[in-house]
Structure formats: C-alpha cells, structure tokens
Length: 222
Image (cartoon, rainbow, N blue to C red; front, side, top):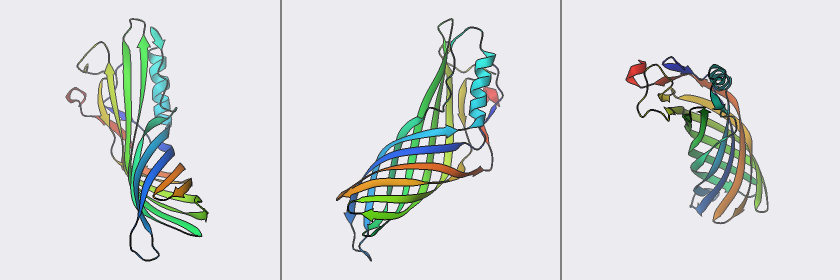
C-alpha cells in the first residue's frame, strides 16, 4: 500500500484511566501541606476519527490476501504515569500535581503469505493538574482539572518481510508535532500515611495544536 509522507491525525482525544500510588512526606509550610511523588499504571483510550479511517482504509485496500486485519487503537494503550506535587487535607482535599505520561499499543495485520504489517503507537505528554474535593476520614473524592502539553504521537511501521523501509510504502517512523489538551474528571482514593492510593478517570474537554499531521523522518519519503 503506497502512502504519502504525511499521515493526518486530527485532534486526537485521550480518555484516561490511571491507578496511582504515591509516597507522601510532610514539609514545614503554612497549613502543613505534604509533598508527594509516585507513579502508577495508566490506560489511554484514543478517540480519533482519522486513525479509525486509516484502519478501515488499510483493511479495505488489502482485503485480498489478508488473514487478519488491523484492529485499530481504540482498545486502550497501556503505560505508566509519574507525578509529583503538593497535597493538603483535613475537611477538604486539595492537590496540585505535575507529571509525565507514556502509553503504548501495538497493532498488526497478517497476510496469506505469512508476512505481517506491524504498527507500534507511542503516546507521551507532560501535564499540570489541580484536584479539589471532600475528605472523609482517610478517603477522598476530588474533581480534577488537567492541562496537558507537549503531547506527541510516534508511530513505528514495519513489515516482517524486509529489514529496511521500502520507498513509497507505509514503512518508517512517524512523529507528530506537539499538541495540547484540557481534561476534566474525578479522583477517588485513600490516604494511609505515608501513602496515597487512588484512581483517576479523565475525559478531554479541549484539544488543540498548530498542526495535525504525523510526518515521516525517512529520507525516501521526503
């Protein structure tokens, strides 16, 4: 399948589910807040009409001789999230966090000649985040607002029958320009000093960027 040197991925939305465990230590500041840092497992669900259209088009173009079609990337990209911030609680719960998230998912098609088309999608981003809500004993329920920036998508496309990219084919590495987004959601968890254990569910309310194309750095595609 011949492809152009740009692959359009238009304003992708990321629905996020994160399970976190953080370590918390006290610092002598006003109102006795805590500084926290930690990480956890993250699942990212990509909502992109362009990627869905790419999957459908690729499967339709290669329908003859295909033993297994591409599945798409809507089933969830698994990864990790690291974050650090400040947290204060008594009757109410307040947290300000900064972090990094990386998720990856693989997809592939298999053909009748036993060759395969393999795709690896990697999603990365940096974020700042505000949580505010109610503290009940050691448990909390917070609303969450997140601003994500330097979001980037990388796609690695390979074919099992060749070790070097074929000019004019889908083979190669693609990378998007950086974009930004805003998310809203909920955070549920428990505090048992020195640990914070919680789960976050976030949904995008805004996405934006200067460009919506994933470009190949391969010389043969320029």
